[in-house]
Length: 295
Image 1 (cartoon, rainbow, N blue to C red):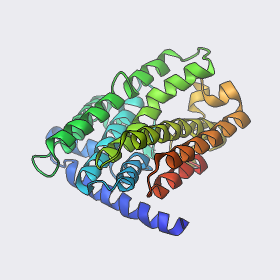
Image 2: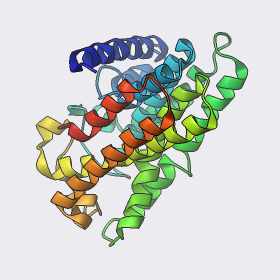
Image 3: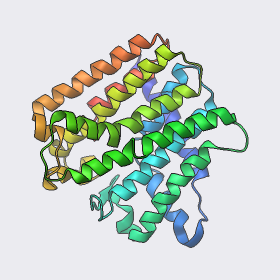
Image 4: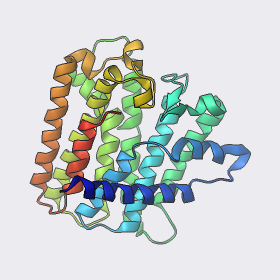
């Protein structure tokens, strides 16, 4: 597939998602809360999770409206997690997506509330009064809730905070990052797939693809944390090393971490071939983008 065509597809998808987030993220929430929410979610970020939703939906000939809603919902969850992750009680960071973090810009209380409100808004977006069948609404909410909660992102973050200054095995690190980062990326793929018709074999293959891409994303993040500067990353470089957090680079070394990212890319492509689906080119190119990115 031509890279130029892929870029055009991404541009269309990103425009759809950005316009929808613009419409669905409130301007008039009480006491300036809408402004804080919009600062946190609009106009920045790679939007990888929404793109995975849209690509998976296209791979299974899925319905466009629920896919767009799922794409925005998962991005709202991701944005809320970053707001909370950056706060002093967590990672205490001052830079995100090339601008001051939300608590730096608006204060800790507003940051906490904005994150809470974005989490709730994600599920509101998934449950419109019309346009998405109730059974599909329930399926999408279930996938997103499980990926966000104690069995997913929140659980992984708890392990992360408890692991500062400790030595982890590679398996323990993989478990932490599978929950903290990987499960939400995997859920993005499955939410897209849920918008169409897919048999158990293809569903399993897409799940494996999502798991490989999710872990690859974190491995590459760990590599970039020590090889890029803050301007390129849009967030504070070297933060994990300074905080004495276990990473793939600290445990495997830089070269081995890079090799592992390439192996995960290969696993993702193998899973797509195994799916038997005809229209997986965008998913394959997104896997490549995850591994080849520089921020």
